[in-house]
Length: 67
Image (tube, rainbow, N blue to C red):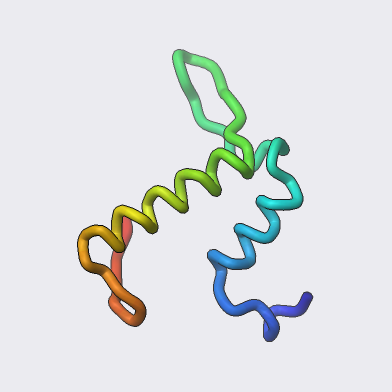
């Protein structure tokens, strides 16, 4: 895989998440201690966010800023 063959950053991440579902991707602090968030968990969050944007009427080519 090369950068030129990847259609989007989301596709790149989801492909990596598929191969690393249970591996830690991010760490966040909860109740005073750092907890891992797996590739699979983050991928699920991304899919839920995408479905929510579609439900709001966001379509291909629309621009969205996430803060």
